[in-house]
Image 1: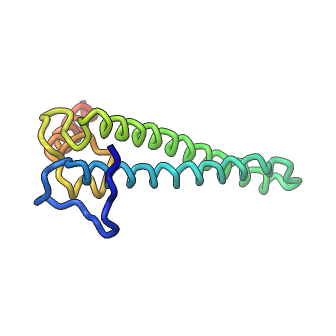
Image 2: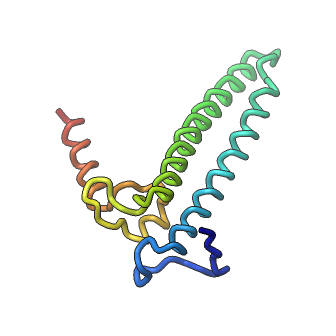
Image 3: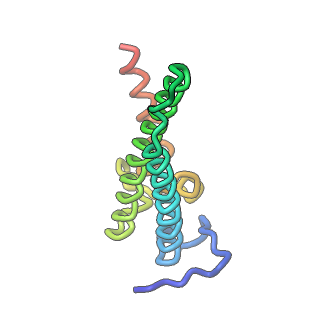
Length: 138
């Protein structure tokens, strides 16, 4: 089933939750985000292949190594983010997108707008963070 989004469509708390138009809105938002990350990743890869390790000056070589390590860490974070986006796209397909993994309750539209890969409601996320802090302090 193909859904055409109105050009200025924005999901609202008044809309029926996760209706076809809303799902298509978030699907397109996730696909755009994924595309941006892949483009950035390609640019990073091209930059890494350019080298910089042949710098004659040891300080320049060290600086290039630091930049390379930072780019690799960034690329790893982007790779993990792309996996989360793919997972969110799968949830749109299976109908579980937008619902909290813990409570099954709808995740607020505002939260999904800000973090379209969210799997927990604000309340569940806060519980998780409190538990993590408690266990970290042990």
